[in-house]
Amino acid sequence: MKVLIEISDKEFPFAMRVLKSLSFVKKAVPFSKSAIEIWDELTDSSEEIRLHKEGKIKLKSAEDLLNEL
Image (cartoon, rainbow, N blue to C red; front, side, top):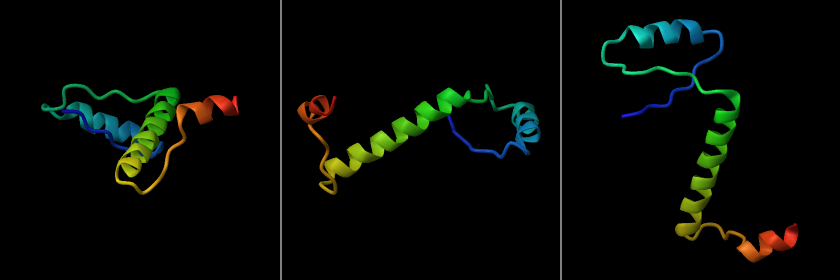
């Protein structure tokens, strides 16, 4: 199982030491800034899809997106 946690820059070194010291943690690797941006965009997109499926928002069609270009 994978878990994503957000830690302040100030506490990052300590948190990584703690995570790596736990025997049940297989791997503790920080995300790069670009990976964080992509993750945030994907999270936002999946939320928009969920809201669209629930009928709470209307998404643009592919044709509308192409017309904007």
